[in-house]
Length: 292
Image (cartoon, rainbow, N blue to C red; front, side, top):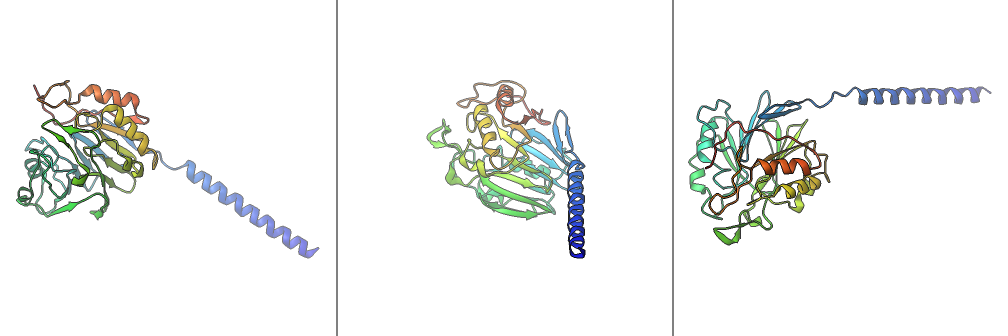
């Protein structure tokens, strides 16, 4: 009888501990704070990271103690937010703009990451020009590189065209895979932000995990709005994309004939918003100019 009583007590204790454990887990799960989201005209703030669209493919990511720029372009000289990190997705002058990098750089702090320059067309920046920049560091990267810097993790992924050819060079893709140009992921710990770069909807997107996707919708040298929506589906394979911000289109006017190049407009961003399987935030760029 004593043995049975002891065994019963042990079982009762185990069950009691289990109930307490499950209760604590459920309470902790239910009490987790919701994602902190603020959406304004020019920016989306998510879990302490402020994401401002500068225009074209340019973005500024700002926390309390860090400033990261993606593809800065057409930035006025009075910009006061100096960069800790600048990431250029590739060597075209509207992504690797030396004058804009100079505007936002602090030569004692700023680190530049960019693919090694290759000559694809007349719109490329050359290595000798990059080396003239007065920066703390200039680092050449390629898809697959993962770097920890200033307390965050930078991941570089492929970005290339499948069927978008340069009208000035009919046999040349705008962004050929052999150029090793990149999309970029910045992992702040509480949020992962993916900048797709200039790219088509490519198979490698299924391996990209992100909370927020910055997606081109121009449709001439990169994804159309419909292809960008399909890219969101690929991103959902590895994660749940909470927000997408369309980029690389002309704001606010519609332009359909710019030389031999068709330029996307606000209409493309709106089409993407209708088709994408996530919450799409259409921002107004803080710096833009009208092309006439």
